[in-house]
Image (cartoon, rainbow, N blue to C red; front, side, top):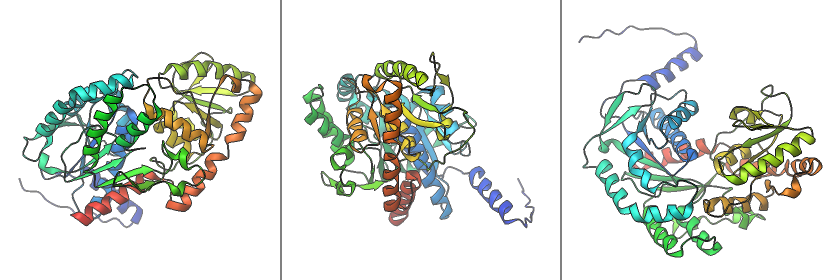
Length: 428
């Protein structure tokens, strides 16, 4: 079919730039489109983080004249995951593809039901079979695989030969790719070794078996990115610059918090208060009920991400409002990185036996760096709650200043995407 081109002249530089961006995102690409696979662990944050980094890398490679890489993410959590990905990436829904079969393959090695002991047993039981299925789906000589576009839901076929890289966010398994990049709070082998030393009640045999598997997976990473504030930073609270740049012969690059740089805002909520991020664990629920009573008596509102008697349900974007004085939640970095970049005090519930051991170490770092506190019953009087908020309000500001001085930014997504794109182009 014959096509005709029409020249359109735009004198406004801003308008020209806007059209160029639009063209980048909507250009039709054929079977030669490069692909970046996101290979995440359990939970929302791993696939959110991996997709954000992959999108940043895709943008940078396109800027250098390469084809804009499509992003393929395993679908682990159905419609909820699709909704979150669309909310997080409203300008790139046509770039992102979800892979239902990839998600099904990973299900047998995904942490579920809050029981880490079962998770260890489950991984060691199904590990070899899951690796076999991943190799069958993504190895260079495998058949084409199908995905669905996040924006249109249309099926798209990709060749494994077009996979140029993976972004691994704490995945327990490996996907074949020319370049593999790791970005998360800590390498899994390192976390498991520290868990053995801490004697948190998990099977030593299961931990040892998984450590051996993770060392094999991690040996092939092109680069490893670890945030400056991480689960083991409590050991270096006097001087974060002393954190090791090599562990088990594996070099690492430290980064700012693995979120964008948030700006404080006004007008989203009218009364000062505390935001509670529910994660479904019992300790958060119990602590929150006591917190609601203490806050109400102290003249503070409690805002939550779900319906809880005595609190006000609001969307997560109110975190940026200046009336949010502190955040309470399980000590996971999906919440923590937002709190960190907003320089808010971070209050957490005690570690629950059997939970992901990362939470145990995160709690230690939060208290050692004085960026927050494990809330206890003694903190739940109105007067003490006000004191605790005041005591920790400056802690995160000091941390952020040191990070910005070292890296020149608080935006860990941009920092990592720049580094991966540079590494990829150097090896191309």
